[in-house]
Length: 268
Ligand SMILES: C[S@@+](CC[C@H](N)C(=O)[O-])C[C@H]1O[C@@H](n2cnc3c(N)ncnc32)[C@H](O)[C@@H]1O
Image (tube, rainbow, N blue to C red):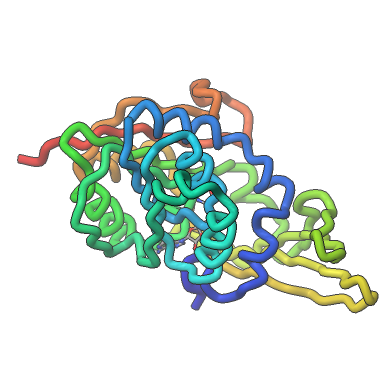
């Protein structure tokens, strides 16, 4: 059983994460930093990983707490933060915890889940437990930004289970390894809306040795109205639903993001 979407199981996932071009260059940072600045902080980032969004948020002058369950991801995050000026470091607190159950003893103006950590929660019970914790940690005028993908129906019925496909360009690490990433859907559990996925890294070391590393995890998909109802059930009022990080509405073509901005509703 993978922990934290497999991110807690292997150090190699954290090691390669920031070097993989589609992750490194993901076009969401401006969106999340903008929202953090607009909120005025403090911000709670759930599943902050290696600090890809967390560190730019702190650089922009916003106080931010990053929570993640993967020791490996947080190890990389702390190392990267160590290279930042002291004033940036002083705005960040890192907490190793499970986003399904945490108690930080303070409240935030904004909670965020950049790049889909929420989809590593595979049951409605876990989703609700997480959203309830977030709700409890928001100030009365606080907001949540829930970032998930919009599942493509064509992809969900495609006859490609078990097939390895290319997943991103070949890249090199600073210590001279060359890495090719491929992916495959191992199993589709349509009953529970879970795809069992493997990200397969073939690493060629400078001495020519080849290594095959597999990051395996279940990924829960949510349909747009399902997510809307889930948020309402956990005490959030929808404010915006964007289809991309440029704040454009959902469009007909895939791939599509589902970016919910929801306000904390005061529960009766
Ligand atoms: C795709 S990464 C996103 C990391 C970061 N937010 C970013 O945008 O680069 C997903 C992250 O969610 C974290 N995660 C998964 N399940 C979690 C849980 N139950 N509690 C806290 N973090 C979790 C993983 O450890 C991983 O760092």
